[in-house]
Image 1 (cartoon, rainbow, N blue to C red):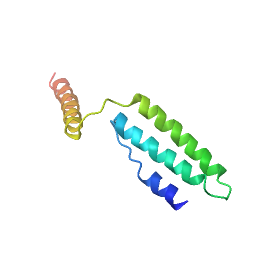
Image 2: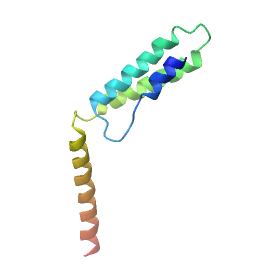
Image 3: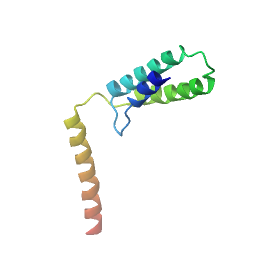
Length: 94
């Protein structure tokens, strides 16, 4: 069970996650599921929760953005925020 938790602790989530990052998180979830298969105790509830988590990350993978560098992600976030600020300033001056 400890190895399964170790895999789940590796999952990262943030706004603008890339396909590669989502794919890596999916592999962590699948590894955790494989670790649970080795446990002799009843892990049905945990397995059902991991199945739900797997569905969520499959959806995030299919909706995720193209792979971009960290610098590019920050640049895009900065430009988006700057545009929002400029719109607010322009409306306030009217």
